[in-house]
Amino acid sequence: MPTYTAPLRDIDFVLHEVLKVSQADIPGYEDLTPDLTGPVLEEAGKIASNVLAPLNRVGDQEGTSLVDGKVQVPNGFPEAINVLREGGWTSLDLDVDYGGQGLPKLMHMAAGECFSSASHAMVMYGGLTHGAWNTIFAHGTETQKQTYLPKMANLEWFGTMNLTESNCGTDLGLMRTSAEPQDDGSYKLTGTKIFISAGDHEMGDNIIHLVLAKIPGGPEGIKGVSLFIVPKYLVNDDGSLGERNAVRAGRLETKMGIHGNATCEMNFEGATGYLLGQPNKGMSAMFTLVNEARIGTGAQGYCIAEAAYQNAVAYARERLQMRAVTGPANPDGPADPIIVHPDIRRTLMDQRSFIEGARVFAYWCTMQADRMSRTDDADAQGLLSLVTPVFKAFSSDKGYEAATDAQQVLGGHGYIEEWGMSQFVRDVRIAKMYEGANGVQALDLVARKLGADGGKHTMAYGIMIKELADRLIQNEALTDMVGKPLMAALGDFQSAAQYMMQNGMKDPNAALAGSTDFLHLMGHLTMGYMLAQSAEAAQSALDAGTADAGFYTQKLLTVRHYFNRHLPMTRMHLKRIQAGPETVMAPDAAAF
Image (cartoon, rainbow, N blue to C red; front, side):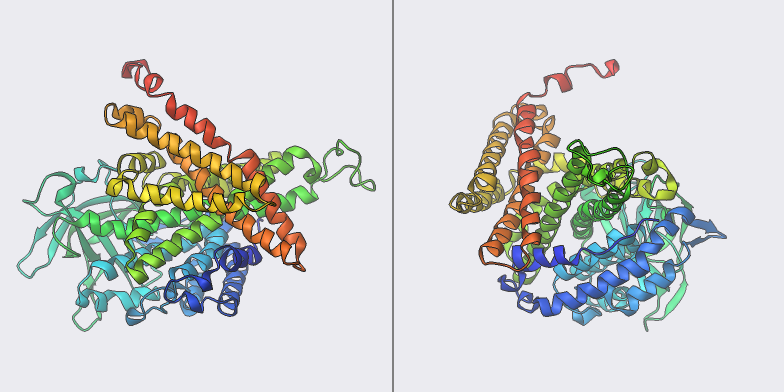
């Protein structure tokens, strides 16, 4: 059975040597010293390895079931939720006035990495609640906050998001769920939502559904969508639970992966709901949850890849197969471990360089979210908005590739269920689809984010990368390895952006046909930026005469691998963008 060990030394390196979090000018970050983060994350790692990881395969094999109208989760899941609940892990970064501990979001991300790598399907139950909590916190009335948030903070009550319907996925303006106003100020919601993760279960006393619906008489399309709080059990004025609301799970989806999470069809049959935010402004309110979920989904890509990589490395060290081409590496055995073979090493280095770059990317994004929420920094908000679709799509795309490569290391055993590698592939595959399929993320990036605010944030992004490249070009040890290649990749990005601006207005297909290539170009460039910071930190430690030279030397080798074998992909993506839309759009639809 696969195992998982939290990579605490790698996480510590990113926090304190790459991003230097305790020195950041973000309120609350001055407390994020190793004395705080070390013990907290060490405990998170123990829970991940000892409590959650053993449940990953249990959840995959048992799945969920709907019995007598009640959703049953895999054995061990309720007990694991209790461990997270009792340890305060569900409320690390939530506001102290509503049941939280007030730590920066970065601590939630770092601990969450350990938990997600160990058993993502299980931690999704709390993950959706966290997003729902933040949405009510951002848009709810004081009464709504006091009613729901304290009990959601510790998972006494859970939360969900209800967007998708069978007739509409991305195009939510087509939704049919209605919300009829009532004399007491509430609404009656009627309709069916699908693909609702953690839509129903019995692990808490209540589930607070956030539901998009249309109020009759409102504007057409997406402008007429409102957001509602719909509790599974109605809440009395004194906070106690009342009668069961008219919302039920109609069926559970049979899925490729994340079997341990209940993906429900939810039926609202005149269910009582309460407006959250302003009428007909539901999408802007829901995007509080969606944007958080997109960062989390991108993180899922590298978190599951980390677990898959660890098990691939363990197998490669033990599996004996053939001899090294340069001579026996294991002369006393019948064959050499496959880790001596160049192609195995290549795929392991591909996985490792992606994971290490994506970890910095995830933590950096979370720092922007903290800066935005703790300082009202509009520039941080604009920059995070720009890179969110990149992180979500690029990390989930490459996370799926990395998990598949890890499975490939095991050869035929990787295809056999008892080895557990196929679960990593099946589980991470959904990250490319939910919270906005990756093709939609690319369209959003090119059509909306790139030129937002007159291109101000895109220009700031380029300046940020150029400043680091300029500095590294002046570093003799790093100029050729990272400084100059990073500057060249930035040039590819600038050429691609120029093509989009010159051609997109007169022929939108010219931009949109290259949107995924543009996102991946930007993904590679951003990963280069993140890994270049890692290289700078590692080289600084080596120059200072560290006693742990082996660790930092390996960091530099990992960065060099990415810069030699992956960063040059920016040029390929540029050429594909510049090829235009002709071959994409020329065939008639009937020709496919």
